Image (cartoon, rainbow, N blue to C red; front, top):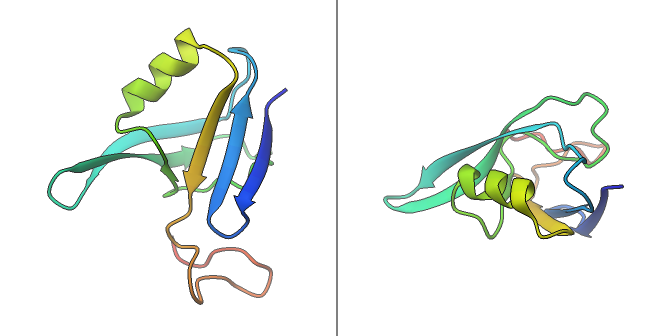
Length: 103
């Protein structure tokens, strides 16, 4: 089964997919930061029972296109480690319950 580990609980969440049957329930997209840097972002969270603490706007590290992520998930090899960076997780971007308040 997939599992998540908070590498830095306020910034990075690592998700490990063990098999191709596991689903994250995420809609991923590719966007450009600055003039030329492409990154993969979470555009939507489709699984309301998302225990991975993943949110819209988080950046998937080590990938530059959503197509590359889909290809890797489809073709393996497994396990696949995915690290998501929360860009809003700095300074005073948290409420009293530890949730990010910047989206």
